[in-house]
Amino acid sequence: SLKGDSDQVYALAMDLLFHPSFKPEKLALAQQQEATGIVRRNDDEGQIAERESSKLIYGPDSPYTRQPELATIGAITLKDLQAWHDRTISGKLIVGVSGDFDPAAMEAKLRATFEGLPPAKPTPARHDVFPTPAHTVSFINKTDVNQSNIQIVGEGIDRHNPDVPAVAVMNEILGGGFASRLFQEVRTRLGLAYEVGGGISFAWDHPGEFRVVALTKSPSTVEATKAAMDVIDGLSKQPITEEELGRAKDNILNSFLFRYDTREKVLQAREELEFYGYPADYLETYHKALEDVTLADVNRVAKKYVQPDKVAVLVVGNESEIKPGLDDLKLGPIHPIDITIPGAPAQ
Image (tube, helix red, strand yellow):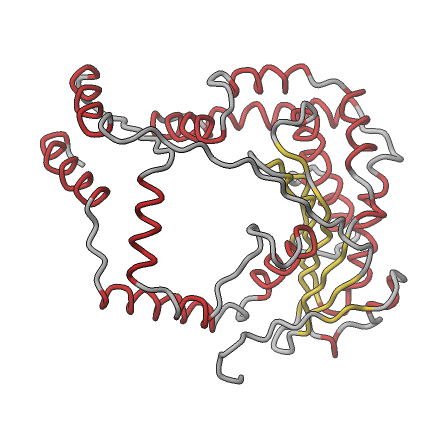
């Protein structure tokens, strides 16, 4: 808000936070809007591919892949909303404020608002177990497209892993931009994809994803998939060079200038660290660790974490136009995936 309106806006925001009014007509509108999104969730092949390939990594019932259905959103009541609100208010709240204000006065205002709340209940420990993706090919037939969305996926790592800096540099070399191996081989040299890239993601509180994505014309689906797999396989067999290392580190370190170039971005990053329980100086130590990554580090993590025999392939495309067929990948039987929307009108 404008500085002159900040007191009024703060009061309104806190009233909304602590005393929300859940109204039947607002719930009905939200349910209608969500239902519209559910009914249309199979319109875009990219959204389908990302959604369904994540299920191959985490399983269909994981909280990271769980999706709303018409029946589940229709069953939500005002009592459910109020219960969610009460659980949230009694949990861990992190409040961030940035702008032009007197720090002591703002701290006093925040303490007056929040210190009366009961202590936050500790979050129960989680014990997530994820299946190792089967080394197979899954297929979703979308007859209204003339291209294929190829997803090659596996399990990633979390940010507690000390190898994260080396993996970040490796990602840049594998699929991080125009100079990456995937781009140079699959798009530039072979001309098989108009978009290609990927790497290993590292989530704050659970293993991220290994994901390589290639978009190609329907007839070149198999060839593009093979080419991407060859690059993935070659990452541990064709050692990374000093030139690749230097370029990758420069790209990542220079990106820090834009990732944290405003107070709001810095504040958001600090809130995230606090939420997930990381040290306050994590970004500083991470930056230093990136600078210290060596060629040996990157080649080591490439062999350790990029395992071609532990990835799954998912293709969303037009079966009638994919020639040769996906069985030419020689990864066993093709597994069709049903993306029918329960309760939705037939299309």
